[in-house]
Each structure stands twice: as structure tokens, then as C-alpha cells.
Image 1 (cartoon, one colour):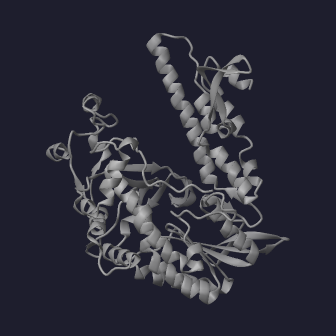
Image 2 (tube, rainbow, N blue to C red; image 1 turned 180 degrees about the vertical axis):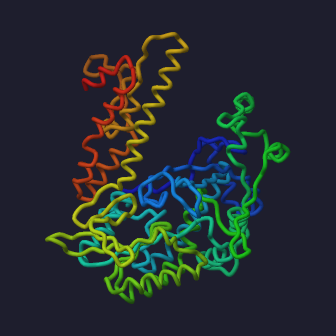
Image 3 (cartoon, one colour; image 1 turned 45 degrees about the horizontal axis):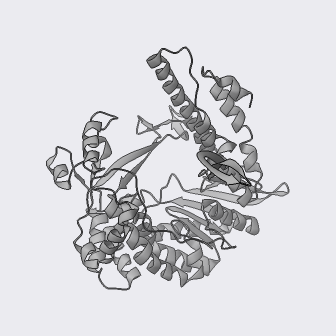
Length: 503
């Protein structure tokens, strides 16, 4: 039986208000269930941080089309690094968002989707969709497989992939409020919901970098003193934050003169994004799926439509018209058209690029590359995995060298257990850990042990994807991961490198 997701989640990060451990859950729940309390609740500023993702993209650079970490735009050299803006709330605020998401708004949204089987199947992200056997829930692997299986079943077809430009930062507040009311079945938002609406649209935030003393470090002396006082926070109170020299920013994103956007990273953000897209989803289902028997799936801001070859222009036109109705834009550079057809006895992919068909260019969807005759993990994801592996070993080496210098050692070992757990097949396996406790079994004293289950790693994810997709070629992509790991370790001067090589 599938276990229901718990709305109450302990969070480890420090913020502007104290943590809410599980022992005070009853008090937190009582507070949130009181609508008057939520109506008058003062939501704290968020903390803003940037996540940078290096990208090796095919770009025009110095008049030449090649893969690079840079691109030229308007005669200026720019980085291709993707920057994601994440904002996260205090612990009590997160509990409020989470409770309303899972207990109040979420179920209402699900009721709307369940009224139409096509609509229910089409929306995949941020939902708990059961697998056919009802043993577990679907993830991105299952959703990608659903699309690939449909392509195999249709044979000759066109697949159009769209991406919504600046999705979360572009959501129109007035439209969001209207659809929120529709989900609840009321003309205006109840006072407690309206307070949540104001919190996610008229939000304020503090940059994480501004809380640091230097570029990298926090004021550990100040934080330690606050911990002694029983507060795992950056300030003793919100008043101290307001009176400090830290700048508190306001959401100032504008579009057509109106403030737009909601923060990405809150427990309620994903649900609100799905709710916002409801009119678009409904119209696409009615006009293209029911009317033309096309296949439609939306995973957050990633849209996929499967149609006949002569229906491509109609799909592009309809998607453009419907997305403008909800005041969003389709990213032109991310729009892709992939053609699948029988070629030399197998289903083959072609990329349609300005009326030219490019042979063996795959459909890229949810981290996978689908060629028609085979399915692979996206090459970019593999490159990221190996780059992170090598960077982790490099950081370990820097740590070992600092130990050598500090204690005047000629050599020092690398502690490789964590490296193997994160970057090899060993991280896919559970193991028994002995303890100091002894138990009597059949008259003998036997040390007690417990089973440690690892969350898994990229290797485990790939092996699982290979099984779900029924694509053994995915495992072949990683057949050299152990060799690459050992070779990378031998590049550094550790006293226990030979032990690693002999494994």
C-alpha cells in the first residue's frame, strides 16, 4: 500500500525564525488549522540564493557553430551558464504552505483533473500519480516512457517540444487569483487564502550572500551565541533583521506595467504553477486531443505534443494562441520538432530544422534521448555526473594536502567510502553496520547490527531507468564508470591508492 505524503517536514536549514521540530508538531498543526491565525499570520522574508549550472551548448561563437561554455549575443561574449533563482521560507511559513498545498488546495485541484480522464493523464509534474500496479508512484522515467511508447505505437509521427519562457517569474497575479478562486469554487478568496496569495505575490527576500561576512563564510561566533540561546537563526528576531544593515528586497518583476511572478522553491509554488496552467491545459485537451486525437503531456513548463506530419503548423499556431491567453511566452530557441518514421527497417528520429531533416537527432525529454530504436540518458547528464565525480575527488585531494601540511606528514590516506557510495555501483547497495551492542543468539554473544539503506546515486537511478524503460542500452552507457573512478583516484598521491586499484 502506498504511504501518503506527510505535509509536516522537519527542515535543517537556519532561517529568520526558529526550527519547528517534530515534538511540537501538534502545536504547529493546531495553529495552522485555525483560519483566523493563518489570516493574521505575518510571513517572514524569504532567503534568496542562486544555483549555477554550467552548460556546454551548441552556440555560435566567433562566427562558428560549435559547442562551448560561451556564446556571442549582440557582439558580446556571454556565458551559457544557467542560473536558477531559489527562494525558501522560514520553517513555520513552510508548514503553512505545505498544509494548504496537500490538505486544502491540492485535493481541490485533483478533483478538477479527475473530471476529465484526458486532462488527468496530461498533467504529470508535481503530482502523485500511481503506477499501473499501484505499488508506487510514477516519476520522470515513467512519464518519459509514456511519451516514447506512444511514439512507438504511432510510428510515423511528429513530436513538438515547447518550453515556457521564464515560467515562475512570469505568472500574472490577477489571473492566478482568478484561477485560485475557480479551484476553490468561490467568487473571491477566503481571508486565509488571500493572506497566502499576498505572501507569494508581494513577497520580500534577503540574499543569502548578504548574510555572510565575507564571500563564503557566515559569522560563526554570532551564530554559535544564538544557538546557545536556543535559536538556530541568523538573527535573534525579525526586528533585529529589519534594524540591521541587511537589504530586504521586494519582488519587482514587471510585465506590461504589472508586478508578476511567484518565488520558485516554496512548498506551494509547484501547485500554484499547475493551477495557473489549468485554462491552457483544458483548451489544448479540447481542441487538439479530443478534436484531433493528438497526444499531449505537460511536465511543469515542458510541453510535448505528438501529431501527424501535416498537423505541425496547426499545433504551433494553437500553442502560441493559447499560451498568449494566459500571458506567457514560448521560448523560441527551445522549441524543437522531431520527426519519427520507418527507415531501413527501424523507427528513426530526425530533427526538423528550417525545412531540413537532420538524421539521428533524438527527442530530448525529461533527461532522456529517444532515437526511435533506442533510449539513452541525456549526454549532458552523463557529463555532469563525471564532472562532479572528478571535482569531488579533487576536493578530497585538497583536504588531504591540508592535513599533510598541518601535521607535517609525508603521505595521508583518502577516505574513499563516501566517494564510492556517491559515484559507483556500491552506492546502490544496502549494507549492515555493526554496533557496540551485544545480543544473545543460540547461546552465543553476537554483535548487533543495523541495515543502512542509502538513498541511491546516479548509477542506481540509471539502472532503475534502464529496467523501467526496458532499455539495456542505458546500462551500457555506464559500463566504464568504475574504471573512470579508479583512474581519477590514481591521479592523486594517496597512501592507500594501491588498495583501490586492486579492488
